[in-house]
Structure formats: structure tokens, C-alpha cells
Length: 207
Image (tube, rainbow, N blue to C red; front, side):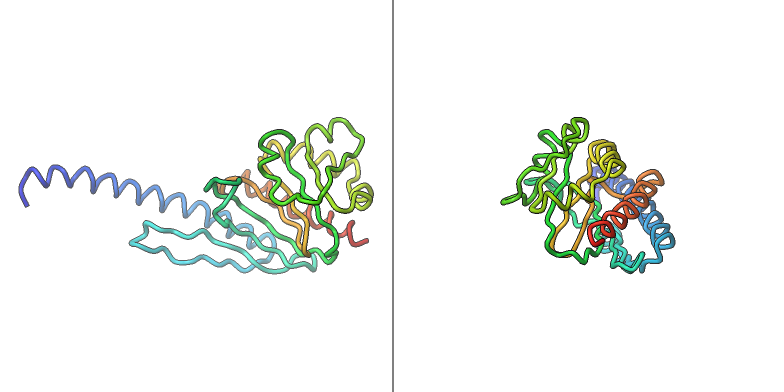
């Protein structure tokens, strides 16, 4: 190997090494947050092994039961329509299989996050602050009118836009999706809050 080629390869090797370290550090942070979620909710942690000498590190996932319902965390790797943005998703079992609903921030971003609202009319609570903040589509407006109490509307209005999140209900599942990965304490704690919100919502729907 000539000195000229060596001079070319050394910077490339250094860049690859730095990239590998960043990937490992980022993956370790995410894995630690999932471990804490696993302990908090008593879920099974699935951490696939790294591939391609550590340059491909699949995100972990969680599955189990919490408050008598199936619960899972995952990062499916697809976000808004036509993009490759990664989402973190928590899914919870809902025994009411008739209700379909989608709740997303109002505005352009919220419109993009309404993934499958065909046949679902926009529901308005009559409370201006909530209706301006959250775009709600559903096939059962009377159910939402009963379930979305003042406290729940306040939580949704305050959290969906600030967290770039959305809630989907249908086919026996209620899910919360947020752009980005669970890589820090603040995000993990917010997801812990989300889980209990979804559980309370599910119990109210089935009551």
C-alpha cells in the first residue's frame, strides 16, 4: 500500500470509527431507556443483536401486560406520509372493537398525521381551546363526548402538539405515536404518563 493511498484511507477509517462510536453510544442510550420502561411496567425486553460489525443496531421493543391489558413499545421506522422519519409507538389492548378515532395536532402537521380518517367525520367538543388544538376524527362521536372529559381534553390539547404525537383507536387497539426515539429520561417519563392516560381512556370506553 502506497503512502498516497494510506493518506486517503486513514481519514475514511477515522470517520467510520467516529460514526461507529456515535451509533454505539446512541444505541446504548435507547436500550437503557427501554430497560427502565421494562422495569416500570413489567414488560419483556427484546434487544436484537447488532449487525454488520455494529454499524446496524436494531431498536429494542417491549411486550407484556399492564393493568390487565396487552402493552407494547416499538419503533417501526416510518413516520409521516412520504417520509422515513422514525416514530416511537406504544400500543394498548382495547376490548371495544367498534370505536375508531384519530387525534392529532390541528394544522398542516396534524393533517399529515391523520393516516386513515376516511369515513370518519371531524368531531368537535364545543370547547374552543381544545378544538383549535386537536383534530379529532371518529365514527362514534357520542362515545368520545362521554369519554373525553375536561381533564382528558386538557391533557390531549397540551401534549399532542408539544410532543408531536398522535393517538389512534381501532381494531381493538389504542396507540400513541411520537416522532423520534425514546433516548432520554424526559421522553421516557412522558411515555410513562402516556401509558396511564391510554389505560384510563380504555377503561372509560369500556365502562
